[in-house]
Image 1 (cartoon, rainbow over the protein chains, first blue to last red):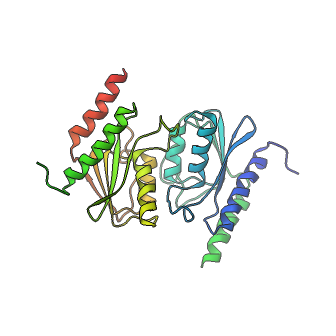
Image 2 (cartoon, each protein chain N blue to C red):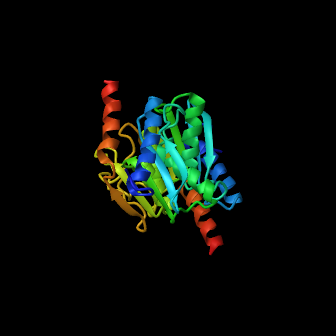
Length: 146
Length: 146
């Protein structure tokens, strides 16, 4: 059993969000934001449902966390996201000055790292938490589409 | 007098949005989106007012235009924005596949070009429309802050 409040525990909560996106026929990416071991925001990709390219999981979670905290900066927060953020989301994370970003699977094609983008210098980054489950879900989604 | 529906005409509408941001003590950036010579979306920076780092002028205009058209892709649209988009907004513009982006003033420090980011290969880019008015407004804002 996973330890309570471990990185795997929180990544599984982000995966729950990704599954919710999958159920809606959205590219299955999920995100949560944690502050002091409490989940203060959740989001999953809704670009199709909302007809809005900006409705990525991370964007919604950032907006929601800032609203909850009453602060647009999130230095005490950790984002858990099942897939490596794209350039747009990395730009938003930069502006938010978020304390930590924990990523499930990498995204070679659309991820911010191969695009040469950096997050805020104060942001810690961890890769590869529940990597296979996170990437399998995306792969399964696109396989079903073909 | 400016010609109706010229790039200067539309950039002045974006500048009106930037002035609206200035009035609210927000970094004065404004954007509009035009389709078939009709303004279908407007936005100005509201990051302070909404406590949300994602509330840039361009992001709001993209969301609003997509909602108006019922399509998350904007290949027939032109964005007019008073300041060069940041990495986040450039990422959103990439996803939107917008047809054209017309920029007032460049932003050496935070603009997408110096960050090495490209828009969608199908997106035309024009720089320097009403450049001085656009940059003067930003400069005036930060001078007043010091």
